[in-house]
Image (tube, rainbow, N blue to C red; front, top):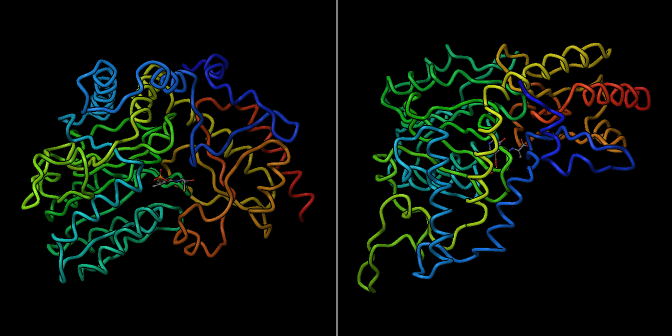
Length: 404
Ligand code: C6P
């Protein structure tokens, strides 16, 4: 059971007012709020042991290195990766996907096929288009169905011995759909394809066991899971990451450097050139501690309750249409009201202290599929309440009255 009142004390920002109203933060899919425990881990680093890592013999550098590597281990254990060196720190999901895409430039050619789902964030589309342009490989789309689920029959038909890589999000940021990744992974492996799962929207809400899933690549961002911005991870099976060339050259990613030849460091350093976001990595570890202290299953159960309540209450508003009615969803509701532009609703909600995202949510193909310019997206977290949802319903009704 979640003690929301207690949990809210951990999030100072939830006490602030916006336009004179108490903040209702329903933009958690864009970025989650940060608890004191995570903020304090950043302050502690800068106040007490700020130093570069993996470089100095001095005490501060050792302490910083230990804390950073401990964070890597926490993340490894949280997602149950086999080895901590399979967790590569990145600046976020987008960076992680680009590392993989860049690595495959020398491994693909004409005749190879890549499959991308129709409900991806642009971060999981554009790098693969760029890869196809460079290699001559072909990008094919796994279509979606009107309820916001993937067409699994079409997926099966698209898979072939030519398929090298498959890209799917665990959870759609625009619709909240939880994709059946176990089935998608097994089907990809049946044709010897590798699969990249974008976990940006799943990690905060669903337990993910990388070994049990037999996942090839997994990417996510700390700022979606109560951590800071500017840090994320790329997970890959050791054997796969060892095959990929480094993404960037520089300090820390080398074994030896001469002007004749440079040899590269092993995992994870091969992909971590330059001074990383040290405070961010440590704070990512603190965010994992925080999430674990509440329990991801308790979080999932509570958010499911919020989703059911919000769906029922919002559905009472005449003319309100929810996009994405998958049987398995996270607590995301994407909607429009009649012909009112989502931006106009979002602006009025903001004036009433309610933060939602409006627009295409960096998932334009989904909007094209539904032939709409965008949606209003309310995305909930374990620190939200039913009372806040009631305020959203009142505010949407008011916006409807003003704009219709
Ligand atoms: N989605 C949203 O409002 P970065 O920006 O690299 O941390 O994450 C990119 C990203 C990749 N995949 C998915 C499924 C995502 O949801 C996101 C980020 C935010 O939906 C900001 S665009």
